[in-house]
Image (cartoon, rainbow, N blue to C red; front, side, top):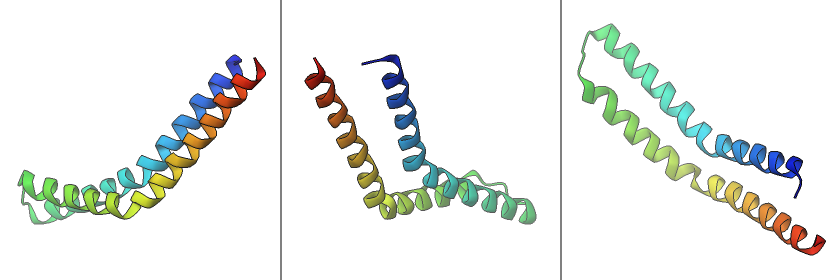
Length: 91
């Protein structure tokens, strides 16, 4: 395994992480900004008003995106195991 292989695996790992967590974080950010805007307009400064909807939305989005996340992680794992097998065959 060369240093280039290690860098490629690291890069692909980070991209898989971004693909899996990115949509959830973006939706959480949008909901948080919308609730903050609503709180600023109504001058209601209750912390639970901001916290509970974000938790619920993140939970629902996670459940909805679970098949996509599993497919992404499975594909990455299969590719990684293929690389491990290829390294073993080259020895």
